[in-house]
Image (cartoon, rainbow, N blue to C red):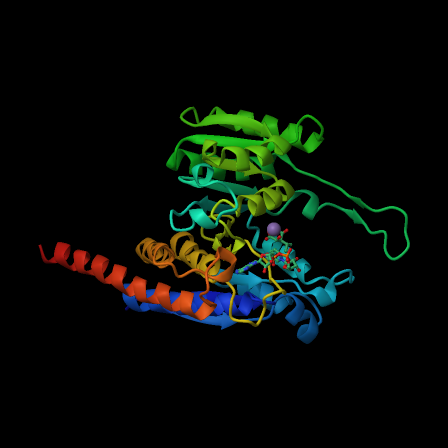
Length: 368
Ligand code: NAD
Ligand code: IPM
Ligand code: MN
């Protein structure tokens, strides 16, 4: 009997449903090709959940997430709730926290077909291949807050990190560096911020276990500069929650658009991972059929690789996105004219080609 997996889909708001719909089609095609089954459950998160369920994520949805093999989320956020006391984004934070997905992997690779569309010079962008490991369940996002409300004169956010929170995410980053090009850049603001000084100490202590990994520390302001000046100097970057949020949007401009960047959020081994494109709900283009689905589709590939152990299917999807972009199937954000639908079709088509080849090779090997 073929393996069956339970995936919770949280399309969310804005372009979320459009890009998750695309990713689901690709997952279904991968399941058919590579001989596994996917059972979906779909639930509300974000503004839609506030409207229908009274909260940006319900306890039942959190329970469904915990009981799944993996969660695929589109994006949350809606202008109607800007400045309100209940925000759609709070649902996402609660989900990350409930799943304890402390390590957020955001791979950033340039793609020759897209180089002309990056706002940066081709020679800066060509050959970029880096991984941002963002701490996801601590720091300023989750520290105690004092709201100023409508008329208060003071607000505060506290940043707290424990050695264990730093060590566990740093370990993920050291391991990733070991499996890639052996270089780790830890980004902090240790010249000013106390939690950054602890961060640096813990990372240095852990480095003793990874003599094969070259470690450097870079201050976050300088890291922001290096990302556009010489991004090829980076292999793996590890950093705290807020710095990682900012640097990953900046890094999205290396391949040329937010619409190309997937992410995987992982916790303890064997626990469900959370997969989402790095981009938001893009209310400016929602409902127009023009959203770039590649980031969500690539997030589905990460889901297959990291949570389901279906690496061959993941490779086939990534390859199919690559070929689609090389063939000029580019959405508006990349300077092209294709819509969501056309880009999704291209991936499905190329996936059946690549997977046919791979399947064929496998069959030949088995026949030998
Ligand atoms: P955004 O990422 O939604 O959009 C920024 C710009 O990039 C917009 O011009 C948008 O049209 C474009 N863009 C983003 N994704 C695209 C795609 N797939 N295809 C084509 N163009 C794309 O960021 P924002 O405008 O700052 O935020 C909008 C809302 O999304 C806010 O409510 C924010 O909180 C939320 N948000 C959610 C997530 C998430 O759910 N993970 C991430 C970021 C922002
Ligand atoms: C992201 C988003 C979220 C974050 C928001 C929507 C809470 O910007 O996933 O990068 O800041 O983490
Ligand atoms: Mn962000």
